[in-house]
Length: 400
Image 1 (tube, rainbow, N blue to C red):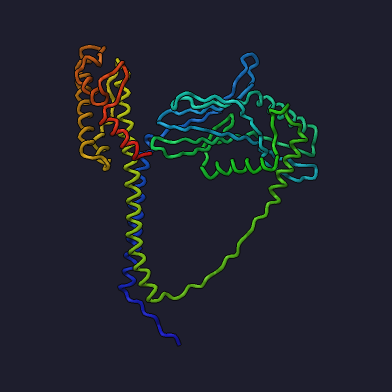
Image 2 (cartoon, one colour; image 1 turned 45 degrees about the vertical axis):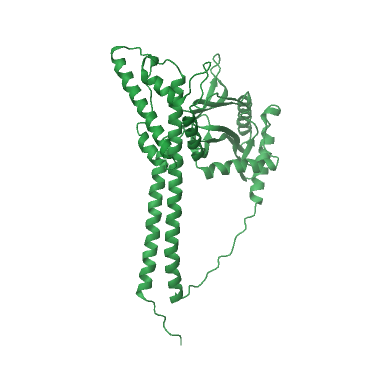
């Protein structure tokens, strides 16, 4: 007869405390991560995707469609996009056999123009005559259904758009959309990725239609492709695995001790790793904000006479406090620069009260601010002050 195993309550309590510690650490990490995400999202681009018809002014008919991709706010770089198009088809034959499949439409949006800036219209994609070929195919399908009482075929065009870019702290973003003439909706990354993988997989089987190689395909050709793709999908074999049930053993004293030790060590390591990750993200974020704010002030000085006041982040002191990598001299330089910027703004507003048109050169603090960033001008060429150039290098190194 086996003897009864006794577990000391001190061990059980230690395990419970370890588990609670892990849970609290995880919740703290999630809260810090959420705060960082909220701050980051306020500076992200706002991408708007619209599919629009082009109307013939004489006939009033749609002759072309184009996808317009626009950024209404925020900064981005390394923008690129990809669009794939499918015909969602359903076919019922004379024996009441039902087939459904997505047929790739190759290079449906074949012409595109890229915008010159990262704000406003980023890109436009055009069908370049393929829309009219699609309409002829739809008309042929309608006639086919009308002439065949025991058969039916339906088609619907869908396009999927993938947009990739890097945000202001060089983190890569990928967005997916589903578009047609009636609506555009965003897709979850997993769903959007599956759409593109499915399109690529069918391309390996050499199925699909290409309007650019001639006129619209016949209904019979399309119907055959639906049956082919449907057959390929049905032929896929899914392998299942066996579920193995493992009986639970009685917890021993040794297991309890090991659990307590692992729990305590795990709590410490996870908490430390999570905090380091959050601190790194926060430093990258604030370094990027400060860098872009200084570049904005620099741009303002280069623009010459303008009728607007200097704008900069009002919370710059809090941002600098988060940049723990800055040394004493760099922080002193930043404070001096922003103090002069504040004095310039104050003088600008005072002059503006009595004069609607204020010249920047008439304000002494403007020249003082210029000297903070640039050396003496040489043949109208701006050259960075050494302290400012070094600061930009230090900041950029932290978020790239």
